[in-house]
Image (cartoon, rainbow, N blue to C red; front, side):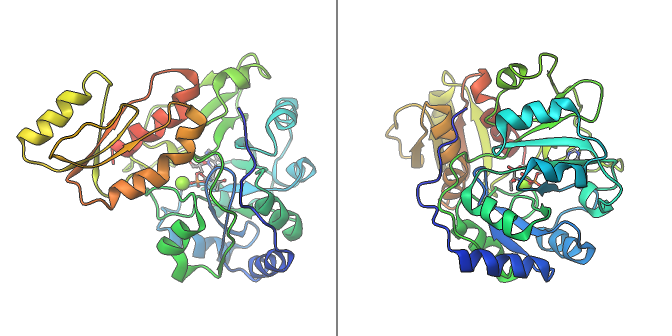
Length: 335
Ligand code: TXA
Ligand code: MG
C-alpha cells in the first residue's frame, strides 16, 4: 500500500523535547501517527499506564501497543525476534503494521493485559518517529479516543475528547492512512492477521507465504477471558448515533424506508447524493480505498453530530483492499 507522508507535519524540536520530558515524568501525551492519533505514555511506567487506562475508560485486560523507533529495540520487548518479524519489518516498517510477539520479562502486565505476548509497532509519521527517537524507549499508545469510540485522525479530535486529561497534544496534521494498523500475530505456529488494515493479506503473503486471516471467534465484551485482541470485538469504533450498512443495491430502499418512517438520516455512500426530505447530510466517500480510509473516521464523527436518527452507510465491495475499512464499518454498525 501507499503511505503518503502527511501534508502538514512540521516538526518543532522544542515541542518534541517537551513531550518526551512529559512522558518521562509519567504524563500522557497525544501524538500523531500515520494511522490514527495515539494516547501515549511511558510503557515502562506502571503508574502512567494506570492513568492511561483510566483516561481511556479501557478495561484492564486490554493490551496496548508499544511504539518504538527502531528494529534494534525489538529485542528489549520481545523474548525472541523471529525471522518472519524481521522480514515484515523490512518491508512494512516504519508503517501501519503491528506485530504480536512473545514478550520479554521486562514488559509490564498492564501493557500485555496479562498475556504472554506484546504488540509492537514502528510508526512512519515523522512527528511520532521524532518523539520516539527522543524518548528512546517504548511508548504505549492506544488510539486517543475513549474506549469503543471513533479513533481520532486530527489533533482537534484528540483535544476535544481528551484535552482536559492529557499534558500535551502534538499536532501532526491529518493522518495519512486513517484507520488503525494491520495487526499480525507471530507468536504462534502460523502468522495470523488479528486486525485487518490498509496493509492487505495479499501484501503480507508476498513476504510470508503461510499467513492467514484470523479464525478467532469473537468472544464478546462480557467474556471473563482476556480476549486476544480486544480491538477486534464485534462492537467497536462506534459513533453514538446508530449506524446501518446497506449494499449499493439496497441503498435506495433504505432511504425510502427512512422516509416512510418519518426518520431523519445522514448518509455515507459511494453513490451520488439523492434528494430526499429524510436525508439531512449526504457525504460521498472516495472509491479509492486509500482515500476512503483517510476520510472515514472524520466523516463518521461529522455525521454523528448531524442530528440524524441514524446513519445509513453504503458498504464497500468485499475486495482485499477494502477489508480494513469494511471491518471498521461492520464493528461501528454493531455499536
Ligand atoms: O494504528 C494503530 O495501531 C494505533 C496507533 C495509535 O498506533 N493504535 C491502536 O491501538 O489502534 P488500540 O489500543 O486502539 O488497539 C490496539 C489493538 C487492540 O485490538 C489490542 O487488543 C491489540 O492491538 N493488541 C495489543 N497488544 C496485543 C497483544 N499482545 N495480543 C493481542 N492483541 C494485542
Ligand atoms: Mg482503539
